[in-house]
Image (cartoon, rainbow, N blue to C red; front, side, top):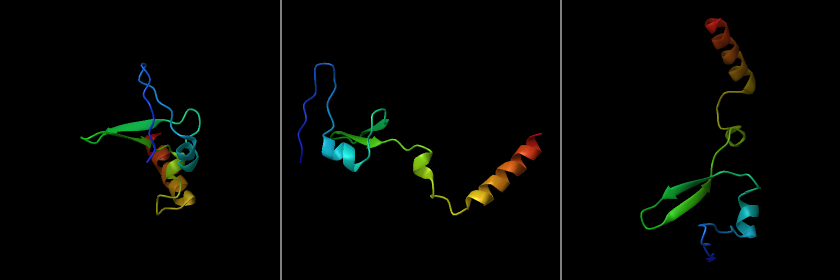
Length: 73
């Protein structure tokens, strides 16, 4: 367990070992989740984090997007 202090402005520092472990670089957005007994901070997902999460290949997705664009034209 690690303890941090909240400043009078409501700020705190995430210890380096956690920033490194969870790849929290400067500018990383965090979600704040109310857990009832406290809050949890977690890294907000970006589109880059979603790479590889689909069963479709890049070419399948590109082909489908091209189809949608043709339908919208």
